[in-house]
Image (tube, rainbow, N blue to C red; front, top):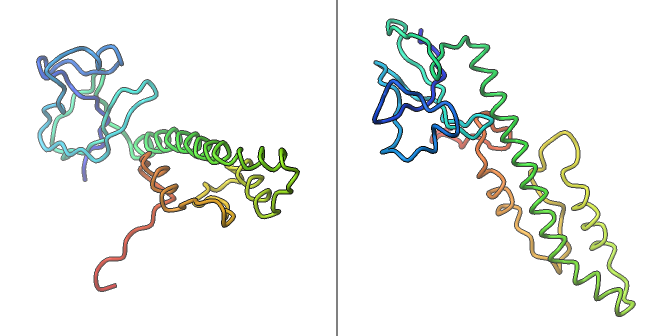
Length: 184
């Protein structure tokens, strides 16, 4: 069995000081390091709601841990809650990214709508349906893994879209699949 820890980085010049606030984290120093705890294994690197980096780590049960500001022992439920809180914040950032991509695509195709109005040439139903579907993003309770099917005249890469969105990391990412292991 192992102990579950939440800890912030410590000041390299003064390892008894945890960088627990954005003002402490941004001080010009030689840097920050993990606390000197025997058997410490960093499992997840995360940021708190103020943008200050911290870690969820494990260490052996026989290691003596003294809790202090910036270092706490967690129960499994608290560990899971930290991950859920982080993933919720990251998912919100992903939705912001989806909206940004959507807005860019709409903006890039506005000229087609303007030209249609100026020349009194009707837009194809495929094009108007696509733009309507874009405006509806994100839609539903599940994260949009793909963009709506674009009309032939518009080039959109779902692979690039997904790559861009998933650059915002999540620990329990529902949008990634595990690669098959060799021999399976």
